[in-house]
Amino acid sequence: MNRTVRTDRGRFRAVAAAAPDGARVPVELRVDVDDPFAAYRRARRGPGGVFYETTGGQSGWGYFGVDPVERLTVSDEAVVATASGEGKGSGGDARTASTGDYRRPSPSLTALEGLLDGKMLARGDCDVPYPCGAFGWLSYDAARDLEDFPPPASDGPGAVDDRGLPRLQAALFDRIAAWECPVDADGGSESVTLRVTACPRVPAGLDDPDADRDALDTVFDGGVERAAALIDRIEGGDPSSGPVPDPAAAGATFESDVGREGYADAVRRVKAYVREGDTFQANVSQRLTAPAAVHPLDAYNAVRTVNPAPYSGLVEFGERPSGVDLVSASPELLLEREPTDDPDRGARLVTEPIAGTRPRGETEAADARLETELTGDEKERAEHAMLVDLERNDLGKVSRFGTVEVSEYRRVDRYSEVMHLVSLIEGEARPDVGLADAVAACFPGGTITGAPKPRTMEIIDELEPTRRGPYTGSMFAAGFDGRATLNIVIRTLVRRAAEYHLRVGAGIVHDSDPDAEYEETLAKARALVSAVDEALVGGEMAVDEPAEGVAER
Image (cartoon, rainbow, N blue to C red; front, side):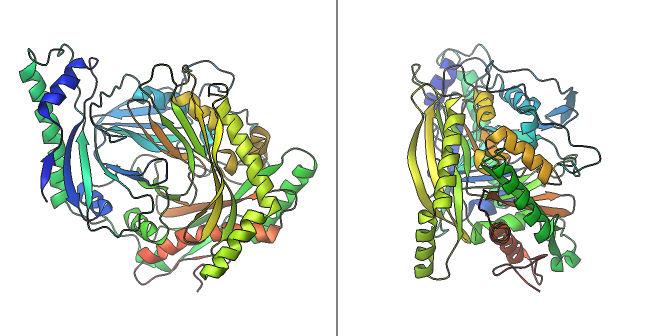
C-alpha cells in the first residue's frame, strides 16, 4: 500500500501556533484499501473499537477507531471513566450544562459532556468531519433522567431491568480512519481511500510558528508517526474474529419475550389508551433472543451485504463490565449537529423521522404497487404528519425562532426488506444550546415512542415487560468542535455475554390490526436474521413463529 502525508508541515505549524493551548490539530495520511471493514478487522487488537458508517444524505462518511485513549461507562449506580489504562470512578452526581425548561439534569448526557469538556479541535484544512472524537451508544433508558417515569410496581408488569445494562458507553479516540461514502454505496468500487488522521495536542506556549519551529515540528512528526502506526496495522494485522462462538448455537431460534398473543394484547391495550385520550400513537416492541452463534464482526460484515443502511455501525464494548456489542443497520437519524464559523449563526440541527412502513415487493411492479399503497394510505399519512409535527416541536425547543422547517416531506426510502416514509427537518440552534441540550430536547425520538411523548413513554413502560436498553437509544459520534451525529438504534443486534437480543416494534394507532402489527415487527427483524444466517457456516437461525421471508426449519 502506498501512503502519503497530506498535511503540509508549514501549514500545521501555522494552525498549531494560532490554536488555543491544548487544542488538537489533525495530521492526515492517506492510503488506498480494498474494503474499509477489512482494514478495521486487521487494525483492531481485540474488542474496544468502533466502526460507524453514516452514508445517509446528511453525512456520506465512514469511520473506524481502535485503541481508545479514554473510556466512559454510565450506569444507574455510577459514572466510571478510564484514561490511558487507569480507572477512576466518580459518583453519579449530575451537573446541568445550561438551564432550560426542556431538560433535566442527566448523568448520561452530563458525563458525555464532561468527556468532551476542554477538548478543542483546530482543524485547519482537514475536512474529515470527525478526525478525532467520542464514539459510543446511549440507552433509551437514559430518558428516565429526562422525564418523570413512575417506578414500576414491584408485583406488577412494567420494564424490568433484567440485563443490568449501562445507560451510556463511550470511547474517545485521538486517531481515526475515515473515508467518503457514496450515498448509494453498493460495494462496486475497486478501492477506497482511507484518510487516517492523528490529532496530537499542542502544548501550551507554542504560539510562534517561527520561534517555536522545532517544537511544533516535533508535535507534527509525532502525529505522522501515530497515523503511520495505524496504517502499519491495517497492512499487517490479523483479520480474525477471535474466539469462535459455540457451533451448537447455529441451529438455535430467536424467541420472543411476549409471542404473538402477548403482542396482540399489548396492541389492544394501546388502542384502549387511544380511545381514552392518553395517546395518539405508541410504538410497542417485542424482544427476540437467541444464542450468539456468530461473532459480531462476522454479523456486521453480513449486515453490510444483506441490508446496507445509512446510519449503521459496529460497537465492540462487550468486554467491559456489563458492556455490550452492537451490530446496527439503522435507517434513521435522530440528530445531526453541524457547527458554523459564523459568529452570528447557531449550529445547524437536523433530524430525519421515519414513520410508515411496507414490505418490499418481489418484483419491480409489486414494489411500485406497495409504494403507491404506502404513500396513499391515510393512516400512514396521518401518523407521519403527527410525528413530523412532534419532531418539529422538539427541534423548536432549542432552535432560534422561525428557523425550523421541513426540508423534505414524505419521501420513500427503500431497504432490503422494507420501505419507509421519511421526512427531513432542520433548525438553527440558539447560541446558548450545547450538544447535551440539543440531544435532551430530541431524545428519545418521537417516531419510536409516540405522541404525546411523555405519557406514551409511560404506557410503553407499562406494556413492555423488560427495559429497552440500547434499542431506540442512539449510536453516536461526537467531535471536539461541537459536531455530532446520532442515529436511532433500531434494526440492531445487541450482544450481551453469549446472547443476541433483537427488538422490533410498530406504531400502534386507533385502527391498528394486532396481527398486521405483529407481522410488521417480523418484517423488520428479517434483515438482521438473514444477516446472521449469512454469517453462519452450516447453520440457520429462525424466529419462534416464522413468517414468509424469515428462515424456517
